[in-house]
Image (cartoon, rainbow, N blue to C red; front, side, top):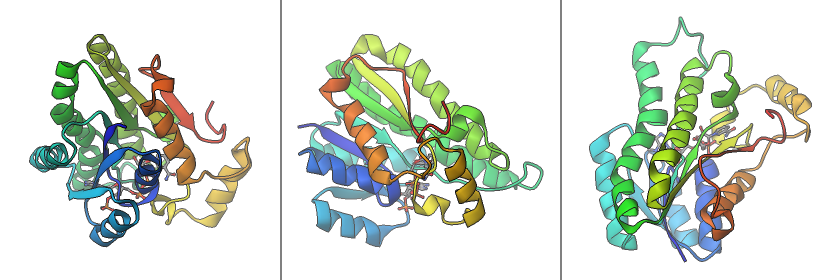
Length: 238
Ligand code: NDP
């Protein structure tokens, strides 16, 4: 049984990760930012512990990690799942919105790792899972900020796997394709149909399919896997 901290666990893929890790018998603390009601419902459903955190702010992450350690004792598995997305031409995106996306999607990952990694290194054991995106791999038109942040997450994952591997810490990235969550609520139906047509498996993904990849990467079955980008995208980006 592992002690798992899931950052951004209140909705979508993160909430499904909370369910899957609890179902597999792990102790789970998860963070929420705005969705307090969803977080409370998930606590009642799964027995996992919610903690509020805004990943844009280092202090907020530090306090959330301290609370998670006080509940769990230690953190064996860290999943950096929180992110926001936006659709905008690069010349139309406000600088403040650019900063918000980079702060949430990339700097937030850095803050989480910064506060969790030292104790993993001193125990010479730990698993970090970042969450990228197929757009971080190939770039998406009108999603330059998001694509840049997610490409950064992939680079961070590979570099950290090299740095932390000798200390017994594995670092991998799960990179989803189009998954049915609220993040895609504003994508119009024609665009969704076009993506399905381009996808070899001819459909969008379910959050459970991403959560199960996380569960695998956190397990002993993945003990020789580090620095990898595991795509869960139906073959859309190969
Ligand atoms: P959702 O929008 O459904 O959920 C996002 C989660 O991130 C929520 O739990 C939200 O918390 C949290 N979050 C957002 N901003 C902050 C913040 N400032 N501080 C802390 N937590 C925050 O997204 P998905 O489940 O769809 O996405 C999960 C991950 O998968 C993301 O990293 C996303 O980029 C990636 N991904 C998703 C794809 C998809 O098609 N859905 C495709 C490729 C990648 P709260 O609601 O409490 O504010």
